[in-house]
Each structure stands twice: as structure tokens, then as C-alpha cells.
Length: 375
Ligand SMILES: Cc1cc2nc3c(=O)[nH]c(=O)nc-3n(C[C@H](O)[C@H](O)[C@H](O)COP(=O)(O)O)c2cc1C
Image (cartoon, rainbow, N blue to C red):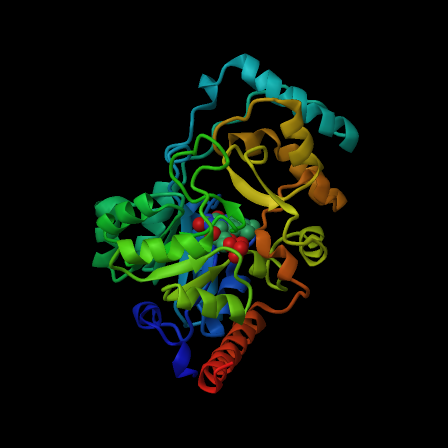
């Protein structure tokens, strides 16, 4: 093991390298999480959308594949815990949303729809109980503050808690709740902005990683993990230089063999450059960074309203399913960060971890030589 890359985070989480794979919804299953953990990083299962029995089965599957530490990710956003009641959305809003979506349906050859999306199942609290019962080593939180009560229940069972934030105010809040480590999510990051109340515009909670990480490091007393735009050893060393104790990667792991993302999404990541992403709420109702495509562009241009968190995704579910059936990325939320331009291959997830470690060692050696030799 390479001692130069060990940080306090490794001791805290019981891992060899401070490299964490994001628990990405519908992308990170047992194969991906176990492969990352086997390579010495921390793999995280996506708990969002999973009913308690399915989550328990996935946790047990990870344990069949590896005896290394791993995590489970849940969202705690105020619009999904509890889910917004779809019955309270005005009929005119539902019709305006479908008015925009029906243009896509016509092109994809699927029937028009005008119905109200169903209320989402209320899964978060049941999933949390499964995490406690199964004594999962790490609970990872996106889009939420667990509060001291949930953190205490984890700590009573030896479960470590890490929470992801996009502002220094939110970092202070989750630190007060007692979390063990904080993920600082820079605006480069793929996926949803990690806030628990939707910002008023896409510019809200949108601070670049180079400014956000040191600001949060200076504000809290727990280890900080950098997330957003990191795919290789260069990014990892830069994050450590900013004061982070580790890195969390999402987009890089979408483009791996073990990721459950459809092939057209993985291929798109190989082809696109760093300016190919946009931040939009058109896909799910909450702001997320994704590859720019026909759906995002035309939905926004239509001026149609957007339903609350995840109900928007519920309303468009038939379109996304048809896009997957056709292998058509133009009508599917291909969540991705600005690191898309740095992804050129589809390796195994364990190879990603090993490669980052080797590259980071090379960068450190090179930097030390430059300083020593004064050039
Ligand atoms: C496809 C995708 C899905 C994601 N899903 C989740 C999720 O379910 N929960 C979560 O906490 N973060 C999620 N994220 C955000 C990541 O945790 C992280 O902030 C981000 O991936 C880091 O930036 P990067 O994509 O440039 O590596 C997701 C990111 C991507 C790209």
C-alpha cells in the first residue's frame, strides 16, 4: 500500500485509499460498489428508489462479493421525505408539463399522456432502518441534513456518516448534526445539486471546487472530501492540496464496465467535451448537471413549468423508458459532470481506483522533483 496517499479519512472509514465512488441512483449497484471497495476505495450503493427488501438484498450481495467496507447512499431532500403530494399540484400545471412532453412522445411514437404523476413511494425512513439493521459500514447522504438524531442512531451501531453539501452554510449545519465527514460538491459535479431546499435558480449553490473545498475545510472540524470534476491522479492531488482528505467521483464511474448506465450514456461520455453539460431542472424537477440534449434544450425553450422534485421525472418516465429501449440519449437524463471531457475509455471500476493511485504517486513525485530542482 502507498503510504503517501493515506489520510485520516482512510483510518476513519477503514479503507486503503481515500477514493470514494458516488452512490449514483440507478447506476451504482452491488457489482460497482464491491469492485471499488475490493480495490481499496469505498464503493457506495445507491439506495434511492429501492424498496426496503431490494435494498437489503443488494447490501447482502455486496457482502457476498467483498468483506471490505462499503456504503449506502440516500437522499434526504425536503421534497422526497416525505414525497410532495401530487394531488395538490394545479391541473393547469400538469397539463402544461404534458403539453411540452407530448411533443417528445409524438416523435418517439408513444401515446400522449395528460395524467397526474403518481405520488412517489415514501421509502427513505424504511431504507434508513435497513441501513441500521444491516449495520452498513458507511451511510452516505445526498441532498439532506440528517440532524443529530439520525447520526446518533448510526453511531450507536458503529456506522460512519458522510453528508454532501454545496455551500459552506450547509457544511456548518451537517457538522452540527455530528456527521463524520463532509463531501464538498463543487459546481462542476455531475448529478443533482446537493441542497435540501431547491435553490431559486440554477446559479444557486453553484461554487467551483477550488473555492468551495478550502472554504469548507476552514469552517468545519471534520475531514472534507472533494467532489466535482475529478477523474484522475492530477485531480486527486489538487484536491488534497486544497485541504481535502479524500475525493468522491461520480461521472468517472458511470463510464465503467460495472456501472448499470445504459451503453448510449457511457458512449456519450467518451465522445463529449467538458462544455457539453448543462444544469437543468427539466429532467427531475431539481437542478442537476447533465449532458445537454434535445429533451433539456427543447423543454426549457418551451417555457413549460417544472413539477416538484422527482415528480417531474415521474411525469416523463414513459419517455425515458422508450429512450432506453431505442438506445437514444437525446430523450434521457444522462447526468454527468464537466469531467466528461477527460473520460476516454470504459475500464473496470477497480482499474479506475488503481490508476488514480498510480497517477497521484507520479504527480507527487514529479512535483517534489520540480521543487527540489527549482524549476
Ligand atoms: C449519474 C449520477 C448520479 C448521481 N446520483 C447521486 C445520488 O443518487 N446520490 C448522491 O448523493 N449523489 C449523486 N450524484 C452526485 C455525486 O455524488 C457527486 O456529487 C458527483 O458525481 C461528483 O462530480 P463528478 O460527477 O464530476 O465526479 C450523482 C452523480 C452522477 C454523475
